[in-house]
Image (tube, rainbow, N blue to C red; front, side, top):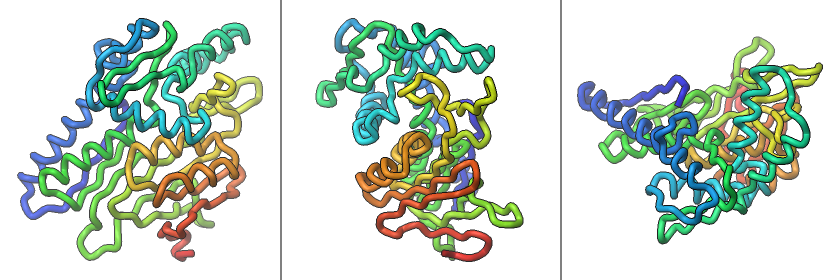
Length: 305
């Protein structure tokens, strides 16, 4: 999926753990083959090519990620949208050239974006993209999904004390021996010495999204790599959002939406998903913690708040 991927396992048998890790990597590769918008032979590319031609059968992985994506899209009022593909492709080109396309071109592309234009039949396992030219994009959920799926493969193989990380998307199982949980850095929250805060989590997922590392300045304005469905451009002044949730795909998608949302919208969004919390950090370092059940365990500057 174009990012460094790490698997850590606590086990008594190194060879068995190595074999399990290889099988977990294969699970990630399966998802990449199904969901990639870069690979011309992926299942998503096939669905895109048939947009506007009625329902088509899809595999279990694509059906699952679509069902999850549409649920988060509805909850976030479209701030997370799996149909954002046409705008993402255009934004990649604009980032490369530093030149904006016309407003007319953006309007045309925005007409091809909208989660309500996706008709998913879970029982029949079919999907219809209503308009020709629509393109699915799972960049805001795919890495979290892959981390979760790989972790589940490890659990099936008997390895419950494990961690899977794809860049800023991490899924963890039971805590390491003698520990309360896995410690996951939150780079956007630092102390006076520049040391990042850490979250302590077990059987959960952590995802971070924002423009702290990936952004571009055009005309004196800072645009994130995350495309805002409301404008068709990279988000302006996107916050860095770190979300903790029971599952990787939810943490990833919710972090994508929270990076674009207001404090009020984020609070309402987080409250809709059980055992979920978020840390939101603005460019000036100010932050908002959304933790309805006070479930976050984190250490900042050596002190746990």
